[in-house]
Length: 129
Image (cartoon, rainbow, N blue to C red; front, side, top):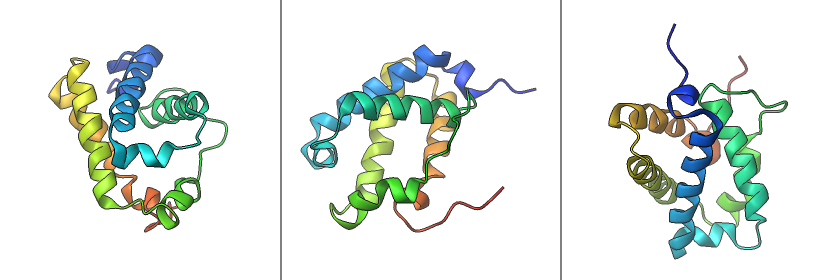
């Protein structure tokens, strides 16, 4: 049985470190920071930690968010597109690297995030399991 990414990345503390490092990078980039203007960052990071934990095989959320609906405003009114998602992936990789996460494990995390691109950008609807 393969150990979940959640456990290999350090559980709750590891996910929190990744989320903090990721948001620090995104908020320093004016092109990305615009998507967080007026957003309660404490709440946003909390939701992101919970979502990332589940995505990585940790504790499940009571309700899995509809990523298309959650990002609809950013896509349709703020112009969220592939170039921004590319930056997210770049910042995630650098955050993982700075946290001394192995390249192999970082690649696994990036694959999970890439699978969500279509949903986040409103191009695909999540298939029912």
